[in-house]
Length: 420
Image 1 (spheres, rainbow, N blue to C red):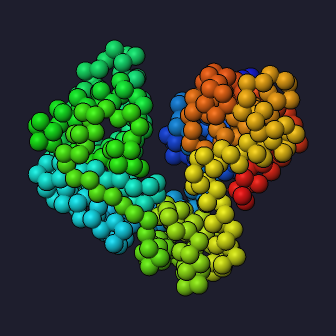
Image 2 (cartoon, rainbow, N blue to C red):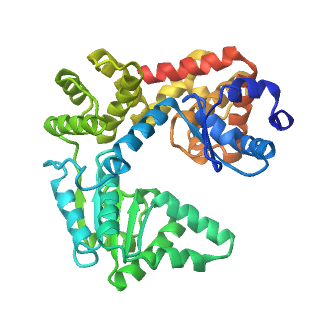
Image 3 (cartoon, one colour):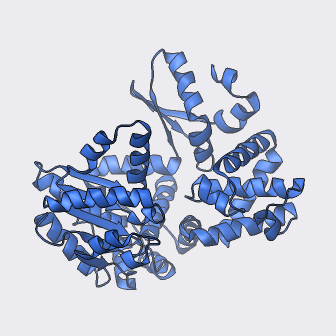
């Protein structure tokens, strides 16, 4: 295969040889991938795989990497009909903790541009803000097809702005973001400390509001707590309606778990439901993630879920959903133990070989298990540059590709972080 010409054999053996074809419809090739290896292959080798496939079959094809869990959940969604898995108002579990935000979002969906403009929904991650924005999108798309509705998020807004600036084509950017009848912007807090992006969003906001167009914004914090948010932008957010979402009560958590299990057509014993609800108190996304993972396991062995199984899955989900600062601290501590250097040295600018090596592994693991950008990872290690972090991650990839011992050590570190 053409891969040998662009990727070392040891890398192919470690990262690529285990990929299994799942399906090919003439346009898209789906490959089964190990969940732990997916991010590395996606970020590092996907383009080489795509080129090799194209040379083998004679034309270009889209490549999708799919874990076993993703495959099972997708199959269930297809068998139950995709509508069951859409984020609609009907699927939203209404409770005292979110009722005000729910009513406000529903009202906007019925009368866009007439009330609550802008609507600013805020609350901690995983409580249902995205669900409400997408429910508005779904409701309007179904009942008002003549409307131009745009859903985006703070990061995408920034990335598209940068891309259009580099292409000297801001007219296209403005045509996209300043013409919708309804603009839904998720995670607006991403633009904090980014004055040029805030300025562009301010003018987008002003243009739409002046023409009576509806804007709905979500954030993990209220406007006053978004760092370095321009006063003029903050005041615009406050001119509409602010609606917060609080963590759900246990009755709501139980209802969410039962609803998700029902959608997946899975039997979930009451004691297991209660156990999950008592363990996970602050995040709806965690609850849904646990049910999905239990379902994936249930589909394989067809055994009724137990408390022991739920406990194991909860550990896994909490690890991936825990606050980023906790994950960073745990990663550095585990790397410190494994390499025999102090956590302070790993975070410092010291250049002794053993410290640099440990720091590179910490950067690599941080990239694999958090959503931090390379710049944000660099900030954890004495404000290292984007290029330094990228070089470190690539160096570690080569080391673990050539050493099964290092590969196992990284896996152990990740496992230990999960259990903390």
